[in-house]
Image 1 (spheres, rainbow, N blue to C red):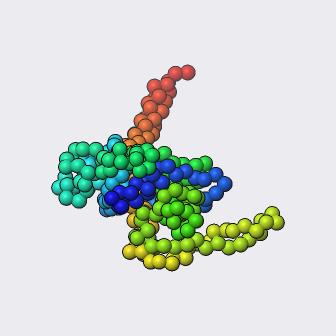
Image 2 (cartoon, helix red, strand yellow):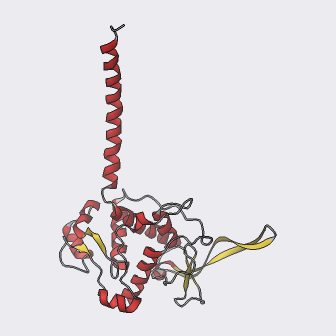
Length: 252
């Protein structure tokens, strides 16, 4: 039950968070891992273990994970926690009535979350998610004990803190327009996690990559086909130009 509550909090923060105007930090560029099968498989594992307990992906079926190199048996053995059939959609394990009683509403669907968050001059939804998942820090003034640089005053705890550990932001005081301001400079690790900082960043890259892929599983095929279509049109344009010249060369 505790894991459900924490997972729900993460998912609600991911789904509901948007860049806070006038606050937050510049978003980091998310790695593009939508063509990396091993990365997508690890991202799917993280998604099922930390998000799917409370959040659905109602437009994604488990058997679609075969597109990232998993077999039906691997899906059954490692990822089917909320249903018994690989043909079922990714439904949350939590009871909707309980979720409404505990949190005042059902958690939103995460199928297309990576495509739904963006900000002018900031980056894509994937950039936001990648930054958000990596910028939590302890804050005793908050009821949850946590805050987030990408989403200041976030109303959810850091459910992945055991992986990342605890760290605090480091600021430098500078003067701008005659006023002292705090400028973010980096992080100081106070409690180590089960992962190193590099491993955690890679894991979040895998998770965000999976969320990107899940939002549009056919995107890589679409891009690949689009490139071939453009090449074909270029070649056909060349032939049509030369054919047109041949037809009209004797016309005066």
